[in-house]
Image 1 (cartoon, protein in one colour):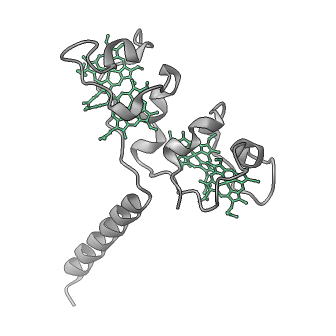
Image 2: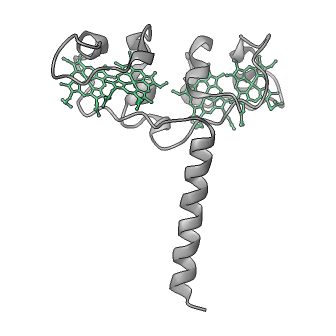
Length: 132
Ligand code: HEC
Ligand code: HEC
Ligand code: HEC
Ligand code: HEC
């Protein structure tokens, strides 16, 4: 058995499975911000469609998203740059208050939201956590 080929085949399989899981969650990795954040808090001043050519336009589905949440997805070190958010396995009806259950330590054995979720508003959870 060719050892190197076995390793290559395993690596391919792992990548393929990861890509599949990624797709399955209906998730697209956001492009990383290509500039510094300092002094650029008002993201939409430049990125609102048509506002400032040739700045890349925020897509139409970004309508209504406030500047405060942009870096959750676009910061080069945002978790979503390297990790696909897990899908929500349960129905959403009657469960608007996500953090009532998912705040760390609030309700065992509900899976805890990670520490970087501190201060995230319930209305934005489903931007990342798609239905399973
Ligand atoms: C003063 C105008 C301005 C502001 C404010 C600004 N940007 Fe940008 N942004 C740009 C320009 C110009 C580019 C493209 C070239 C570059 O990287 O400088 C860009 C590029 C980007 C890209 C890369 C897009 C791609 O095609 O890959 C992202 C993502 C981005 N910005 C997000 C943000 C976020 C998030 C904020 C707020 C924290 C922000 N920007 C604030 C002007 C701005
Ligand atoms: C929940 C994650 C998320 C949040 C929050 C978010 N974005 Fe995005 N953004 C994306 C994804 C995903 C794409 C790529 C969309 C696509 O390819 O259809 C994108 C695309 C963009 C682009 C287009 C880059 C290009 O090359 O065309 C810009 C500019 C941008 N976002 C800016 C912003 C700004 C400004 C905010 C805050 C007002 C913001 N985004 C909030 C996920 C997010
Ligand atoms: C009543 C408590 C409760 C509420 C409210 C709730 N969840 Fe959950 N959530 C759970 C439990 C319990 C699980 C574990 C899996 C299961 O039982 O379905 C879970 C699992 C998850 C997971 C999967 C985590 C993993 O490890 O894969 C995600 C993502 C999630 N919920 C997101 C949300 C979002 C987004 C909301 C709000 C729209 C929400 N949840 C509201 C109780 C709740
Ligand atoms: C910007 C995208 C984004 C948003 C918005 C977001 N999450 Fe997450 N979430 C992630 C990512 C990525 C992970 C997995 C990586 C990690 O642990 O940081 C995660 C992990 C989780 C987990 C842990 C799952 C586990 O298996 O341990 C829970 C629970 C969760 N999120 C719930 C929420 C709730 C509730 C909200 C709204 C308040 C929310 N998330 C908002 C991206 C997001």
